Image (cartoon, rainbow, N blue to C red):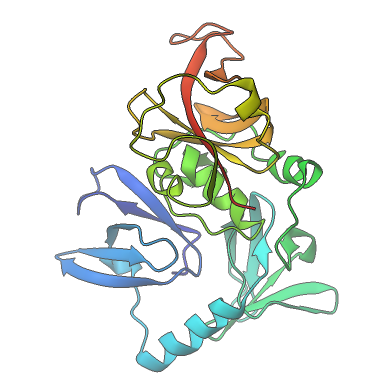
Amino acid sequence: MLYSLLPLRCAPSEAAEQGTQLLFGETFDILRVEGRWAELRNDADGQTGWADAKMVTELTGDEEKAYIALRAAATARVSIPMALVMSRNSGVTIPLVAGTLLTGYREEQGAGVFEVLGVTFMIDKGMVQTEPQKMSREALEKTLRFFLNAPYLWGGKGVLGMDCSGLTQIVMSLFGVSLLRNASEQVTQGRLIAGEEKGTPLKRALSKTLMNRAKTGDLAFFDHGDGKITHVGILLDKDTIVHCSGRVKVEKLSPKGIISSETNLLYKQGEITHTLHSIRRFA
């Protein structure tokens, strides 16, 4: 996929809601074609959705094998929320979002270079991390600082619009963690640190003793008291969370859940906005 971000919709219609997005260079299976719409399945996380068929190019068998092998070996990713790359072949520029994998990445004459299906792209090497970062509070805060205040967008995975699980999927990819797409899927991964497994409601709020097990980089999951996960965020420490709700923001976390840092039409400052269900470790 050679678009910056390709929306995958929940039905074959421009009016259908966006379920997720594909990043530049991601591969997918074409499940079926209906008129001007193609149903795709992302190879990276298994998420399916409908895309405008004119934005889809099918690879030959040899092209597919060679390119998938390159992606499997790649470790370099765009490390800032938005980077511009330029095709050396045509001079065309394309904006890429954080987490985009750069196949065949190398440095030439002080610039970053990568290859996609015979096209050579150039990128400022300062916008690239060549290997996954090691999780620490300093590294996580440095990564997240440019995401703060990014607006909420259902199904979004870019800094101009993202949802809660899009934020966790993209940010954690920079630390070498491959997450599924939605919060209800991400909660099936990693190792349970506190709370219950998906589908099992909490009988009572987590204790401070259980909360003390949490550390930087853990993911906190939230429900409506029924064990059905509806929200996720990344812990800076056991008392602080970064999540996307309205916008990407930092708020306090209590054993009961997220404490609102602001007053708006739904919540007053200090109220619980999301009920804590569980904490899981991935890094």
